[in-house]
Amino acid sequence: MSAFLAITSATIRQILGVRRAILSGLALLVPAGVFLLMSQTLSEEAALDRFLFMLVGLYFPLIVPIVTLVFSASALGDERRDGTLSFLVVRPIPRTTIAVAKTSGALVVAVALNALGGAALALVYAVETGSWAPLLPIVVGGAAASVIYGAVFVLLGFFTDRAVVIGLLYVLIFETAVFGALTGLHALSPWRTGLAIFAGLAPSDVAGELGTYGPAELMGLGRALTLTAGITLASVAATAVVLRKRDLA
Image (tube, rainbow, N blue to C red; front, side, top):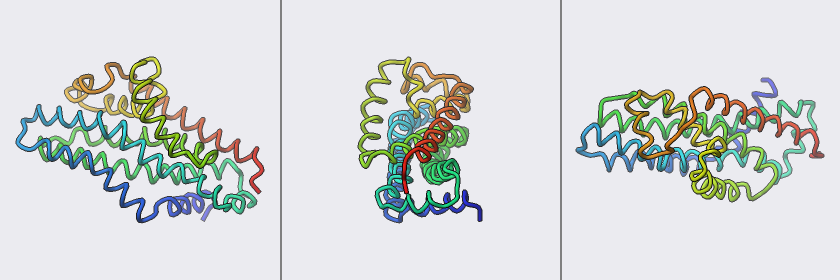
């Protein structure tokens, strides 16, 4: 097994504890459960309204970032606190490989769990309306937001034991209040980037109703995908630089 695969698989096992996975899984099913309770005996149009409300009010702005934060901040943070990171960096493995592998492990967990939550929400919508059209957009959009948050939070977790607190403050205060009021800063909001990808992939009748519940203006699909790739690569590169420059042994 290559060093990259070994570190990635070890990271997945490290951060995906049974208790943490169960609690996160239950949290991810909350939007689908609430939507199921709200959508009984509704028309197709009303079911779409409830679906978009859960999507914009709960899944993208809260569930995706919080679940990603919990797992990603631990990828390097736990090893730094436990003193095991020094055993990893003394091996003849490039620091860039370590950075990419640790981030990849965190992203695999975050993307998979958030995809589960998004798929559950789309499943309830399909049961109510017979349409599976939102499934791919919600999974891809949620994955994109997870990738951005995850890459940033892995780096943040290396620097501070309070990464979860800082991440929550960023999500609940800056993204909700500050960025919500200033449309020019929407590019700094990962969940809005994910929502833009959802809107770009969703059928026009679904995407056209998003403005009622979410940001009035969303960036285009191409820009959202480019932004996702750019922020992720920059964060991983910064993590690699930090691992090279700091004396971890």
